[in-house]
Amino acid sequence: MSEPIIEQITQWLVAALTEITQANGYQQDLAVKRPEDTYLDSESVTDLTTMVAQGACEPDQSGTMEELFWKQTFEISIFFCPVPGASLSLDTRINRAVSDVYKRLGVELAAIRTNHGRLCDELAYRFDFEGVEIGIVESLAATVATVLVTVAYTVNRTDRYVQTS
Image (cartoon, rainbow, N blue to C red; front, side):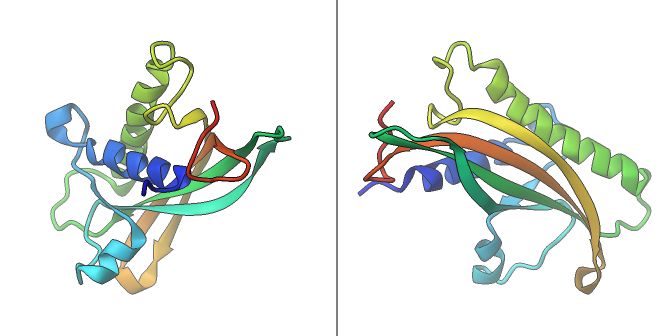
């Protein structure tokens, strides 16, 4: 059986962000995971660990008899751990990483005309960029920048594994 549409979108987002590497023309290599991966593989959070977590979900507009419209917020949290002898300021590192996330998602937005108005392997119809939150995780001695992105998508009213359009 296939995965629910929202799970397919989440998997697409993780795969897209994994493409953020220097070899692909970005400023750094992000180590992208879902939150539970860190606990399952016993890896600690290191510099540039990037976690993709689902946040709030709410209706995007009134549904029809066949479909429902949703806005799912994703929290893309990039961890910045102290790097001895780093030549760049923390602000510069944050600015570059956040810009790389926007750049990668912008590649998807630029292709919307050739994808019949659809995004995320044709699973979604809109991205909304909701801003960036910056904080400190004392237990990890790390700064975290969280990019908030909302993805709008549809599902069949009676089966969240299926899209009607």
